[in-house]
Amino acid sequence: MKTLIVDDELLALRRMEKLLQDQSEFEWNIDVAGAYSNPTEAIEMAHREPLQLAFLDIEMPEMNGFELAEQLLAIQPHLHIVFVTAYKDHAIKAFELNALDYLLKPVHTQRLTRTLQRITNTTYETLVNQVSRGPMMLCCFQSLHYMDTHKIVQSFTWKTLKAPELFAYLILHRDRTISKQILIDLLWPEYDTTRAMTQLHTAIYQIRKVLKMVELDLIIKYENEGYRLVWGHMMLDVEEWENKVRHAQAVTPQNLDKHVEIMGLYTGDLLEEHRYLWAEPRREQIQMIWLNHAKEMAACYISIGKYSDAIILYQKICYKFPDMEEGYWGLMKIHSLLNHRNEVKKQYQLVTNKFKEEFDLTLSKELTDWYNKWSKEG
Image (cartoon, rainbow, N blue to C red; front, side):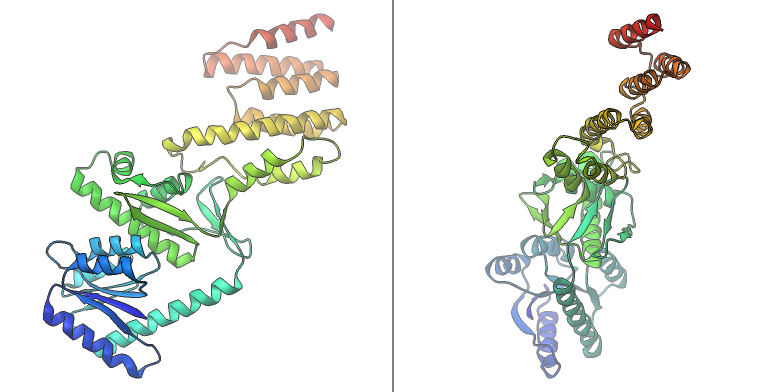
């Protein structure tokens, strides 16, 4: 493993270098590719050659270990980070943020050996899983979760509310670099700059830790004073569903089963349980795709006399879009075809009252004219 050491104390730097060299008797091969007291030199080296492991001192004057780790991970996202510190409180914080491990000064040989064993095991398990597993799916319908290689729904474990919201935002803006300032203004507008920046860094670390833990093929890169979610071999349920709808042939009795299957993939509105205000435009866009698809399917059901199935779809439309006429009008037309006059009147009265009392709206002239014409024909 090509290894980097950074510590502003020269004696501590040389001691760590020697401790690593003394580990040669074990199964791992440690190659100390660089040992620096200046974090800037470490960053320059990370640009030059690939690294597998970095031991970073936390307490450094110009750039602390957390900040350095941020920049190193932006250059080499798969780098294993081990923080080294003389203060236990810092060590615990480092471990909670994103470190694979932490070491307390003075570092002892046995403790270092356990750390290297842990890194070796983690690396081996990752390689095995990459070979044996199929594609995983990240899910944003209903809530933020994922499906493992066995199609089993799995939940994320978060320590704060802002980390999943930041993760969701980066997902919906994936492969785009979002500036730190935009993220701060969105998620921590009430904090001063210093505190907001700390909250942002903590959330980013937490997301990276979760991604490593569940082994999702996603990377958060830091570049141009912002963050970008790099998409790997992952599927996104919203995108998969949207592509299926857009590329499907028009609904016909012959392919209706295929459209039923596609409709079944829509398990809830985008991030419905979270109700993030910034996601509302995208949520409404996807809802409209669902609405048009549902209306096409309902029309097909009616054309082949499957009125019960059409009624179920229109009832769903009424539930999802209580301030739109489509669902109620669709139900009225079906009941009109079936000569259920009382049901038509009931639906008309229902939508009239709902629009007036809940939304302060009146029915469109088209619907009113249709109902009046229907009433006279009866």
